[in-house]
Image (cartoon, rainbow, N blue to C red; front, side):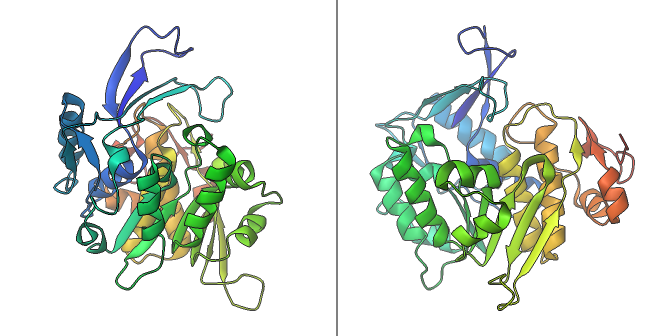
Length: 334
């Protein structure tokens, strides 16, 4: 979607102007992966309007392949406006204008299997499933294991306001997640959507199917369950990595950046704890800029930070501009 960012904090009714940028869970991940040196393709639909052209130009400028994005002559490109507050804050407002959008017309008939199955990783978001019945049918098909399917990554992205029935949306998201190979979900998100309480192990009990489950815990860090059951019988791994302290500029886009950092490290074959550290570093890059997509640190820079010992990692504090400094200059203590 085209995203409109407020010129100042406050209610949507009081914000005098907005700056135009790009946004969208899957495209954010694709942009961050392309910036990190990976080949990334975004598959979607946009209108044959100025906003659609802007999205293609802007996302393509990040190095993302947009050749399989269709232009719809009958439907408009989706847009949304948001306030500057944290999404979890009671004052946060989002105004979506995407009903009947070009993206909502995606279906099994409009998306070519070859465009999706030719990659090493196929990343999906629960937001797409909420756009229309056709989008949901497409998502159900993609989240069903099939021969030749690449590693399927699924970010739950629970947005109850997008569903006509929040209860139905929660059930759908759980079903989709169960068919994925790698799932990202927030601990608070699992509680809000599915009523899961009792910590990260309770989330794993609710979602035992994915080979890798990443439970995000906000400022406390993230926990990954990998390799199978973790009840002592199947030998599964459990790793928790705390998040570095971050001087936050804007909270939106951090979840998508985290997914991109984790996926980048996965594609590189790094150990599971390092995948979490790279996820945290990518999220920190997004948290320290106002928009949804941040400039990622150079790979050498990120690798140096991810390799810090536990004490140095625990003292790490990242602020605006940290991605542009040398490998050790930004490792500040509070």
